[in-house]
Length: 68
Image 1: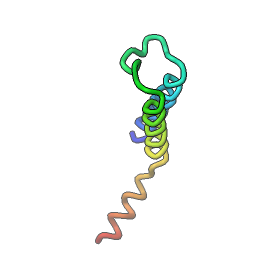
Image 2: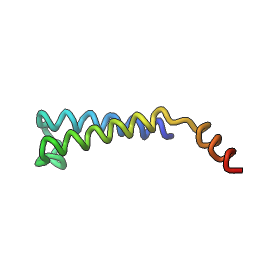
Image 3: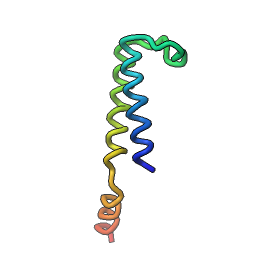
């Protein structure tokens, strides 16, 4: 499930970064945002998407075992 959200965030981030440099027709929700803010938001979505995509549930299990 996290891989699906990771892929969605990654694609969303790429489209936001692309829209920051060149306007996408029909992307009216994100139309009047400054270039720097658009790039930062896009990079955040890409980075978060990558983290969600590569996250393994075993890491969470290892942390729970250490607490016991």
